Length: 281
Ligand code: DGT
Ligand code: MG
Ligand code: MG
Ligand code: MG
Ligand code: MG
Image (cartoon, rainbow, N blue to C red; front, top):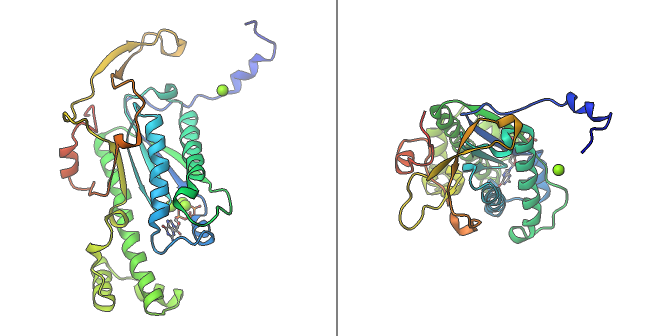
């Protein structure tokens, strides 16, 4: 196709390729979900239906980019997706990856709303997004630990807070004042002694968040089989070799994914699922 005299405007575009070899975390977070949750009468402190809706939206993202995403971890109004360090999705263009993931998550959230929620959607849910690169696997592990620790801290606080308000008739201000400066042990004790709530018996999804991974095959999961491919068709990538998973060509279904509510801070999970964070540093 002949170049038009206008084509020079492409020179104004900036390049935003994610560094090769790094894990990339795509994290999205609901915008103003404090008021969105109130408007849609989300149950307090956790609405299982809303969390399951988020999980369904995350599954759809994983299914769509099956060969590129390792796992997703979600809690509250946020979800993190981990891009394989060797993925060449959209030539690793940050804005294209981020905008596609955020818009897909959002549209599935809307599409599936009525399947999970019994109140009509009153306003368009909006999610912001960012991508953070982690060069080492230990950085990625610490990132995921950070999010799960956040889940725990927030959930313990919220469980105690709403028990004081809903069961003890405290005002929001009073509840906040009572909990100010308390540590985890004190909150656990308050829940048990005043409300008979053993925090450890609260639902795992609320305490641990949701981790979604590809279900291992019946024969047991092996390291993904990979082949090297050259990409001579793309000028930017001439001479570059990529490792590409040779997974089933079949499109994955919902059943191919596990939603787990498990500890991802300790080593146990990662030892059992050693193939996930591959290749190693
Ligand atoms: P942002 O992200 O800066 O636009 O502001 P927010 O309001 O989205 O705040 P954020 O993301 O720090 O906190 C999430 C809010 O969403 C928090 O106020 C509680 C609310 N939320 C999330 N999940 C649930 C739920 O299951 N039940 C209820 N009642 N509220 C929830
Ligand atoms: Mg925020
Ligand atoms: Mg938010
Ligand atoms: Mg949030
Ligand atoms: Mg286009």
